[in-house]
Image (cartoon, rainbow, N blue to C red; front, side, top):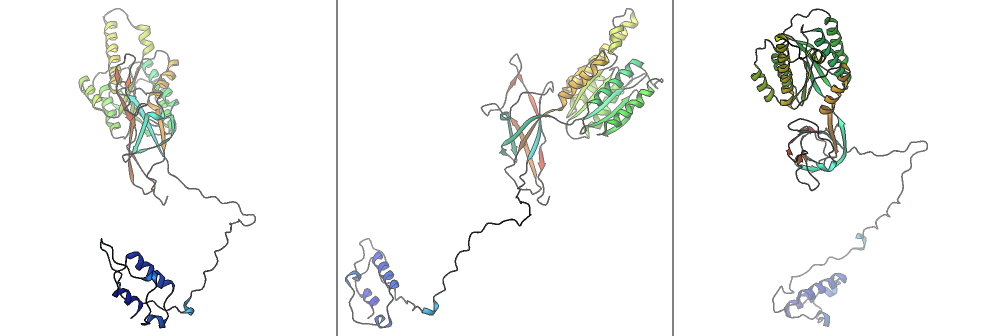
Length: 406
């Protein structure tokens, strides 16, 4: 009987002993003479032991066939590892560096008071939270910038009086002087009807050329002395409603309306319902009102009442949309007026971050911007009398990632 068979006839072995015996056989395989029944008894270390009381497998796993090693089957030793060599540029060749293009996203954010539409200054990077597809992003760049604008110059040009026409032309010219190359501006005049001087363009010289042509005509009698400002403003709102983003109407007029089809109530309702449109009103004829205001007589009183109502209408158009109203007296004050307008409509905060989703797969990513205080809670604003102030956050709602092939 073979050695393994004798183990079977004895009592059961414990698992560790069976493993030890198997390892021993593997380490020293039996020769053919020892694999047969030689009548030898196992050594003391190989005596079988009883199975543990808790039970378990016995030592009988059946016969194990151990193949005989062939000296010719020994594999050759592995080749030595290659030497660690460093690459050297050929003589005269410049050094080569690897640059990884990590995408960046820039978001222009405007923070305006809801009631007055005035820009809120003094905010810090910690006051902003940016979310891309709902995932918060780490802001790495922050600064205050002045963004491009989209504006319509809506100007009264009628036979009301030479001084009114000259005030309009000087104001429009002062506004074009502060235009930037990225700004989109159109110009439209009105009397009884509207006239498009220039469609939306980024070439301010085109607007200035139209102003110069109107200047040449200002010395000739205009066709009508009547002005339909309500109808003209309604048409301007309709034209801007087809333009995306925040828009502005720079209304330069006396404010007097004569034969408009729309009533004051209807135009005020339309102004209230306009979206993303802010009106800045600049009254003409300020010098004339200062020189002739308060004249006696019925005609003087009626004229003063007419222009007081016109002033109130211009002021109301601006207030309803969060704009501002101006009534300059001297032409020298016009640059300050348009500079104030520019500061209110251009100021933005520029936020820069590297998106956590760095894939350049051309997908559209939704953006959301929030304002928080130093404790991470929603930012609350108040005026000097500690009254709460509501504000609007103006920012794009998303962007499209670049394609990998780009």
